[in-house]
Image (tube, rainbow, N blue to C red; front, side):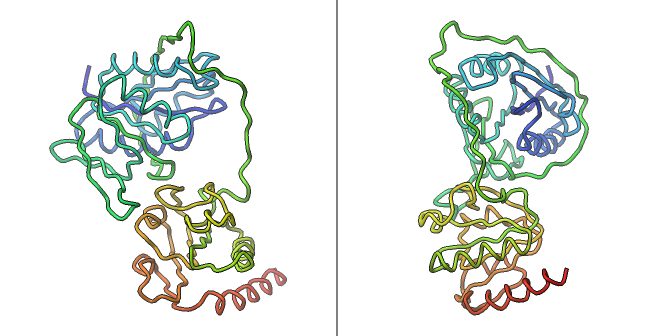
Length: 323
């Protein structure tokens, strides 16, 4: 079989998660540079349209369907191992979702190979270079794995979805289920996130450690609402419980690419900017003219946000009334 890259294309409710399509898009680029095939693996309780993966570059789509795949268990591990051993991929990439973050280390341990977590970029040199943030996001480290397959995880939003059609051949996978699964499924509860998801918004307002009170946080909430956007935060705000990790932007939170990003009281450490550097227009308000966020910003406002936001909110309220 030709040398190949393998992507775990996680499905939910019969449809592929966006992160799998993002990874396929990047992997297609990598595969083309080395004339590799690109393979995708689907393990789910049902698939509505497996061939959709071919639009994002998959040459071979391996599909395993079983009712047990409605929740995570050892069937995922055993079946994945069978596929990896059969295909012998050069690299195996998995989305850093809740399921993927359980599957990846278990598979890597069984295969006795390395695992690079939360990769933010790949490139070819003599080998595959995996770029990951380290030291709290202040340094981008380059990892080279000498064992095969080179395994890694990627957070949702890291790469863009680009349609680049692959051959789209379908292959049925034999499902292997253990007689006794050490993981016992008790039930499933879907918890809807509070507020608008930041990864889907065209405008994202982000408050950082420079926001001094929960009352001031209310001004940021109103600003996001008036702009029909979403409200995000950095770690200090989540630690104060004004927001939560579901809305945190950065390498330990989510990666966002809105048309407009507005950072208020955000210092702009590399840990944070890794999560928003591909935004369209970046506006930053900070009273520290040396704040690192200004290195990323298109519009820099050196001022106390409490001197800026009240006037801005008044103007936006007036515009809304006139609309």
